[in-house]
Length: 266
Image 1: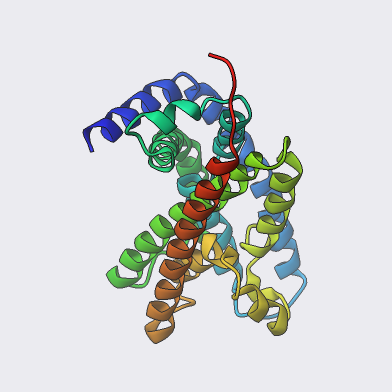
Image 2: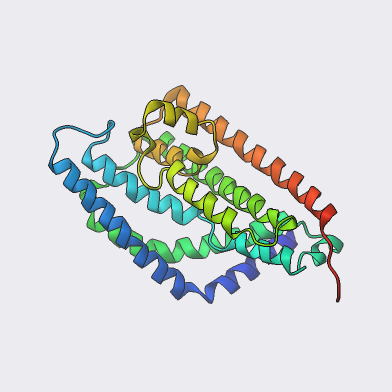
């Protein structure tokens, strides 16, 4: 475990070099969020009642919590770096040293999220303070604890999906197309663009057979009190199942890929 703590330390030091970039990314990332909030304010102004069970306050809170969860769990450039390691032969060292590549990449992902979250929370906190009248707090400590657990599993699942997608570099030279397709689908199916409750019931039900709602929509719904009781614990169990499935798939693809992998030169 000591070697992995050392990797996290190195990752933090390397990531701190880009702290200004992180701050700028978080700051300018609030521009589309502001546009989205203004759009929903206009929608609610012209109608009576809620939208799919969301009041205006809950809808704005949804997007604010989405921003927070995204800061904790989003994958930055990990998939591109993994693909480059495979393409350029840098993983050869991990095949002869007692360091697990998946654990190594997860340590770097963790280090990146720690620094990005610490930096991004500054502008995000100011933004939330300005919209504090619309910000909804969890109903109780149980909801807050379940939300924290769900966010942690969402981060694991997000990493494993990106890691597995990047491993396609064992078979194809360029994985950019696959990554962009995944990102586009995830942006819709995870609930980035809007709460999944707005979709037709059949579509929403179909999405729940995929891991994507558990990346964002599910933890945010826990926070807002949309999912409670037996549905909450069942959802957490399903989310944990997706994490285990993602881990098993990542290991399987890695083992198959390594058998195909070949590197030349010194």
